[in-house]
Length: 406
Image (cartoon, rainbow, N blue to C red; front, side):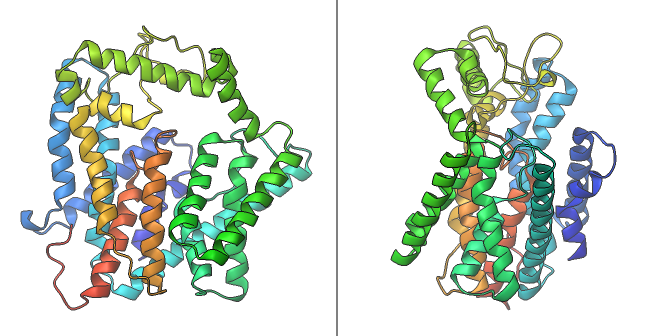
């Protein structure tokens, strides 16, 4: 269990050293790969997902080398595509060795670490504001919250599985999840948070819960409108102004996404039909020949020839780099995983975890439309899916063999 906790929080460990994020990601990728290779006893037990993803990537890699993209960019795109599949397989290989309740304890141990991180960030935010800093500040000094742990906190409270101090801490986390997007003036996180509440409201709420959620939403929205003179709602207004005036600088962060979609779509059309199947290869750069990129993107995303590597709108990134084959395979993994997770509606810890991870899959897929870090390139995305599937299997068939899982 200690090894798994370190594996999931290894980036936090590396943050204390002056190491470039790309180097940290490469180390984590190699670590996951090493664990995957070590724990395989035979080819029959090898998980199908990494092998199939490699098969999907072979044409993309060949096209990437043919197009003479940067070797570093090619390697990065290959690693990020494989990451969720590798995370899933490593999760299966490690968690199959744990008993049912040890996996439960593991997840709640991770929740405890998240709560510590959250309340530390909250204390830092309060201290920062008391020193004269603004409460609302774009992309700075937010609270450490994640959708998965928000769902777990909500369902633990709903099913009355926690009491006393634990209950208070989880309520505080839920409040933090709701207000964090407003504090950092993030449109993408606001949409994700609203979607999270809507999903709970529609699928997992009784009439009383819906009333409480509605009151809570009105309270948060009203408080924000009263005390935020220049906040996340102004950023949404900027988006509306962009649509009305077509002024790039009205909302540069949205404009750059529109520009990348226009440029990528036209590049794919130019090289169709083969580009639709295989894309422009791993490491592909797009060029602003059709719609100029005038701002809203960090300078390090540009390459010496003026090409841009990072793509913010993930569906277009999949098609551009890996073709429709890579696009459909990735989303098939997400949909297939979602459908494999069963909900028994028995009010147990198993039920809490299943519902939470199911909803977090939806959030990850939607959130990647705006910031591609939730599913794409995320080892944790696959690992937590493996966790709930292993729990489900052991919950139903504790005495059966686990040979065919994965």
